[in-house]
Length: 101
Image (tube, rainbow, N blue to C red; front, side, top):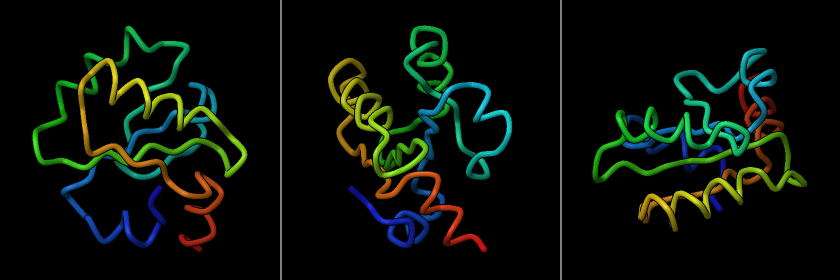
């Protein structure tokens, strides 16, 4: 888990991943975030891997603290894509919005 402030401090060394459904991502998301959800995993994973590079930290978020999508996407990134620096954003999108106002 990582807080909004910690993840923001990483700046350009972090890639933000939005694990929410496409319609929520389309409405609004963390600036620069990439959509990678379970519904379209096989389609979106190659697009994500195309922009990821070694040494980058990955911050995965979903709607809120109670949402499990970010944990599941983070688990799959670690297991299936063999990536190690994968963090789940504490509080998700709700926490981001609170810090952005």
